[in-house]
Image (tube, rainbow, N blue to C red; front, side, top):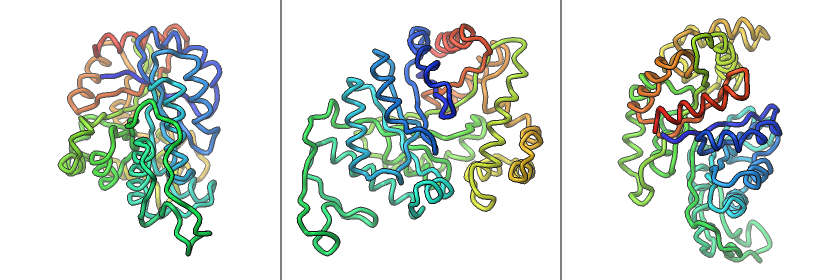
Length: 346
């Protein structure tokens, strides 16, 4: 399994980047930069590309509603250029609260829109004269929708690669099936390996049955918090708080994809309680209501033997890339934990 690490969108960027060369030497292979309603991921990825040499970089994730497909393709090609072929384009649909509330764009037909964005990006990277006719995008614009002066153009520059890896974040059955069909990689959240086949097995099989052979095997990118030791149990509080944030507050009461996932895992009552408490402003109580099982099974926190067992479960479930968030209190221990995991999965 490949070893990755996400950076936080909430702060600490400079310190994290300063530490990346040491993480790189410890075995870190890819770093993911998120994009919520925060600083953009692109400027930070370009900076990281200049500060590293072999470390792969990925957007984790860029939202498909906030840029035109062509700009997304141009941006990916530019990041692949400045990193000398180390970039992965992570894309996702986000949710209605962010898309409509922050970007002012209607949250419509996310599956169809995602497919169109992927198709257009790949045409741009191949330097085709760009034409596209779809439900959401018509390129070039016809006379009735503009001046009539638009004509098919191709990317001026020659990309480092004409097929940049695309990673799709997806949780729902139809989204997951589409990711397995058209993407190079798939990124779920709060991945519970023992329940992965039950929840996602059928959609993954459906998508893989339609998969273009040239894409190769699907990269399954799984996130988990990491702390190795006999006395690290207290760090599970960070995991609880994160799960409570997503299950409780990342979305409206009536439409929260992460809450729906917790329900599909079998935690319906707890998911309802966490959401109610969180939206009422009782965040500490919401975190306390997160089930121990969900915390334990979606993280890598505990003694070395326990972490080894959880890594085996992840491998057996089909995970191919680990996106690990080291939680140890000291910088040296965080680097050591990455080094330990790298040795365990090599």
